Length: 197
Image (tube, rainbow, N blue to C red; front, side, top):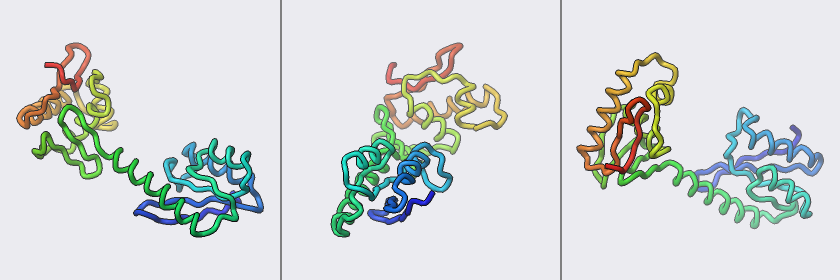
């Protein structure tokens, strides 16, 4: 791609500035590659500001292909800086929100890999933590033992008894901490995290 790409940091978030006056057709193609996960070095969720022509059609095409904000190439630096702060700030808020899960009084911090119930820390092994995350991302869903093994052990050979053992241990730790959500065994189907007693 001939499009010019710069990476600037703001609020500890990297924002891409993409634009090219010489070959503007490259910008939409680059955006599609990034947002579609086809660019090996750039994450699909990377915040992006595009620079180019200031007409409505160019702006529309930029937004349709995943630009977070489009500006004319002639935009003054002070305005570009203000937009950079806004885009980076929103990305930071989204990142902070996505790193936490809350289910019936159970708080999971995915980045810190920590769990607490009503403020009390619940210490879990790596496998038990990953089991809890699997359940908490889709509460009330019944997960088969095979699905749990695939999600937590990721291809490692593990038998159903091992899965049961970890689920029982996780259920005990949550119960001891006073969690209102409980792990229920749906006989013949699997396990689910539910607030039903």
